[in-house]
Image: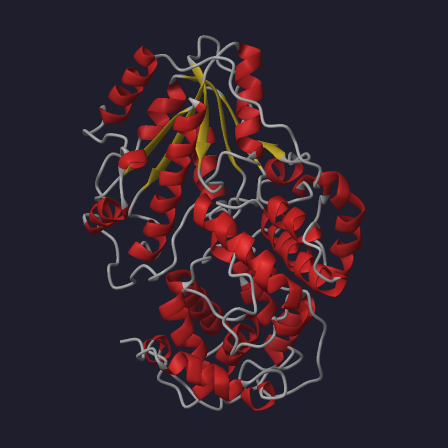
Length: 488
């Protein structure tokens, strides 16, 4: 199957935030502009929604915001469903306060109607959605673009600096960092939010409910009125993997994301540069990655808050580099690279070193089930896996070791790659994010240089448990995660 980014048309049309995905015109006689919310789950600092509102105001039409969730995405589970539905509740309440029409449709069963968006798009003058290269979003959008009669635009609301300013995949953090720095101040300037000038009438809202129900009786959820128990009951009725539970104490949504950001700015950022590599400290990092992944918090808002915090320059700079350089480098890689999550996309030197060391004996071999259950002979690796399963995240430093060690324990490099994505995407709250892709591919040599020539590793930068104790309190980290039972 052709990879969604193997089209020159797709790669060449991203300027600077907006990607036009078909040659269809704005549809005459369309009743509204449809904003299909896929990965940017918020109403503020949402460049796709802004584009939809501007277009609707020019056309004299209302805006309809549609978001949906079905059980067919890879590793669908209460962990991911809860973050999305709790976030959608915040969006629904915010939309109500603004008088904007927003609807959320949940497909509980795998065989439920899958053509709601098609029917909504058939009535639209224009469809605008989110540009997101991973999690199947861009591929799904391209399929719709080929079916609809109206123009379809995908808009980048992820990056602070518009991704279209970088027409090719950057080689490393050192190549993109100065380019981002030159644009960042301008990119961070707040943009005035505009509301649609034309309201969706009650008649239109009623007909939209009929359009949703047309293929099998689905109806928009009344999310604004749903409490946590009601959301949990809705999730319990879905055909998903209920063994991967939601994370206790972690709430999804823009309200929870804003609260987490405020707490980090006040308490974590003033010590960030000193604490961020200490994996035994649960408060050393921002814990914002799930909210950034689901688009419930804007990266630009995070950076502005850090810059205005008054924290020391070293702390602010270290944190801003994570949110801008590394996050936007990952987005750039995924949006500009065919097969961004495949070994074949890695640099030529990685290809050579893997070929040269393909037959090297591995020091140990584990099955995927043993790895998933954290049943290895490496206590630190097991601790990282337990943290992933029970917290939905791994601290940055053990995460690198967790990824690289997989090379030593699998049949070959391809199996290591596949199992890393399996474990990450199944359990991580930010699974299937460009940042996750970048982190895993870095473990395999992306954005790095050759480091000697060792068995199995070849020229790939090695990381071993025995040296981790020089970087952070390994014993303390193992103790912290020991309270979790080994995953069954």
